[in-house]
Length: 370
Ligand SMILES: Nc1ncnc2c1ncn2[C@@H]1O[C@H](COP(=O)(O)OP(=O)(O)OP(=O)(O)O)[C@@H](O)[C@H]1O
Image (cartoon, rainbow, N blue to C red):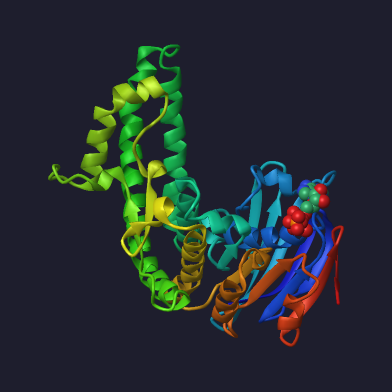
């Protein structure tokens, strides 16, 4: 799929911006804090209606403005879709081909993106939270149902944790509602785990192939979804039954900690190279290569699932990779994947890409073609 054009109004440091994008490579060059990442963030908003870095949506409204808007035209399956997203101080409004959509899930998924930022190189080395985010971002844009289940799960989890934290100050009636929250937590949680399991199995195949290519066959990469709820050899019932049972048996502890100790919000992906856990035993280089393989696998998985390549967003990441890994990244983009790159480098990359890239210079919230 191709994002043909992008228009911003009062988004971050852009008062007004209108851009045509190359179907192949577009490079945004500029010094720090000029607005390069803001452009990629706005594209992420068109894809996911969610930013990868803003705590609250309203942070993206240009200071002093009433609202922000992001619009773009996406070509997929030989059809064009115009996507509009308006960010208000409270809430968002979205339209597809001019028609307002009440449910975000009817908007998300028209544009698929894979974002690769320097922090993604910590995907394997970093905390489990980063790997859960990886799962949620990709599954979320491929499955509106997953996104819905996740949002419901988070809401219920929050309610349950509020009860656990404040039980002493609450009346017994309210504490007694815990079992109602438990039931909902089990319902949404089991669906999330099943979907994540399926996703990890699929992405494992792609990332193993890519990793083998990058390491010239020396390393075998395996990914496994890890959840304490999947270790239920002694329980003959379903995943939901085991989850329910675990919530009950850990209830006392959970009250003491003031939080819920079991569920998909505690799960992880175990990454192994040649049967060794890379998080614990891998070298820095192995951890970075494994992360690169996982991100590149996302591109292939989306193509496999939705029938077209996603748009690849590379946020200042090339300078973080050595030449060999850079080459693999650029190779896998090839001619097939529309790619948008931000960089502070004024040499090297441009020379490498000059023939096929459209290059924009970014300075203080304005963009000029070079
Ligand atoms: N809501 C907002 N309104 C106006 N300006 C904003 C807003 N939010 C962020 N900015 C400005 O946007 C700029 C940061 O832009 P961005 O994060 O895109 O930088 P960048 O060019 O990617 O830099 P780097 O190379 O350091 O990552 C800062 O100057 C910041 O003050």
